[in-house]
View (tube, rainbow, N blue to C red):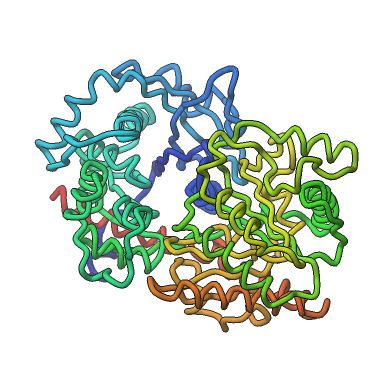
Length: 554
């Protein structure tokens, strides 16, 4: 293998990477790509091009995209593209400012069934049972592949020097399409979470106790996931290099996709996202003032600066992200009778209707919410059915939080323009004291990594790639590394809740010196996850892809 790796051709004159989340901040993959961009850009310069969906309008422009029509030799006006595909060229407004092409793909829809037929004929992709966002993802993916091919021709780059990287099932059909029209390109496919694994967990099935008994194809039929699973599995097998973001996900792929990734590419972090010390102190003060004003108005009590602020955040997946376990761990904390006030915050976006007018008035008048103490900052369209809202309401009705633990729910996307908090997520992180991310299903886990990068100790689980990385490299303790990893199984829910409660009460009892030790330990741990350390796995993946491409086209 080493001889083959040395002898294969791996020149990269054009490295293109595509994802639905390029310049489109909707989930964790945005963070993966936007934080690793600078390291890649330093190596490849403008030979690196990101490709994302042009889902923006003049009334709703992307805040992350800066258009520059003359870039890439005026590709936006000079490339000839079929299916009425159009592109805009510019730079991504992130550290490194890499080149980016946004693709308008609506013109692919009238041809999508013919494309599905071709994918069945060439690769056996079964799109018969597609529904939901399947067509949208595939239309974008095919358009991205067409743009990749056209861009390599426009820039006069030899196809043998093109490397194309596709992320998640939403771009998988693009990999297959590019392999059809530009077979010389080396292709990579990264799964950040298998669609079928996420579905198993999202449907309340026990993933871990019966893990070795699951068959991905059979489960896809049972859970009506056949199209996405077929596409994802095919791309994993057809890619010149298949990667996953953690050993945990690699095991999942081996079991459910019948292929183990050739390279594991863990997710790093870009330190430029962390504010300077002076900015940090200012953000901490303003953030805490705002959170205490909100919580005070909602709960009818005063929160002083000795209050311990603990939060969870991320995607609103009640079970997968451990939101249920977080809330139940707070009940355990209340039972342990913390000596300090604890303000616990659930910060996950939900189906927001509007900011709470009553809360806004109470904050403005420096008063309390009049009707009755509340826990939610924004009214929801589905407030009677939202899992988090229902659980908090139920726990409060049962009198579970009558002591020093107060729980509030901020169900909006924290972009600084939500109407209540009006502070972006990264600017709010300094206001916290610690975080909890007790995930049941978490291929990597950016939220705990972001937390420790801001010096906030965190509790997470061994069912996250990040948690597994901590267990492999550090002493598992808040004071030792700023992280405590809790074991989760399908049958230890109550024990896990109790253990998280114990960690929270332990932190509440820390002296100022111990809190500082835990914070510095968290920062030190995060530095080991800098992209400059993890990016080497991507370079290895590029090499594997080139070697397998060479063997494929001989």
